[in-house]
Length: 93
Image (tube, rainbow, N blue to C red; front, side, top):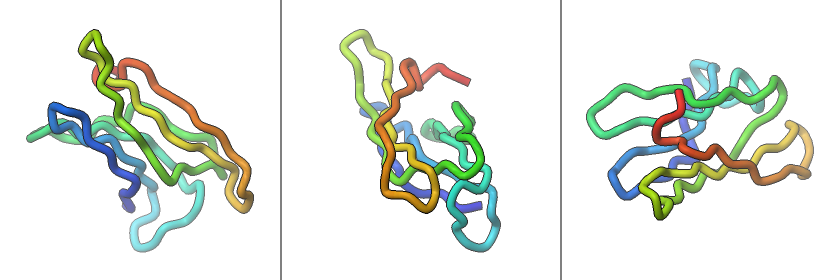
């Protein structure tokens, strides 16, 4: 698997993008958004549709104590995409 585009919240939790290809990156190949708490296993919090990928993430610590994960999403082979978010990414499973 390939993992990339990591961001870190204030409690040390890493939010990243993971693809299912074992030996090299392939755009939109079983792309998942993952939360990796300190000392714990990775938890898939969202899956992207086939032929869609993300290259960046941002973990925002909200005032109420939750974390919102922002990420870009785009169709493979294009330079057009958008910014998306997952609210309560620290508890979503």
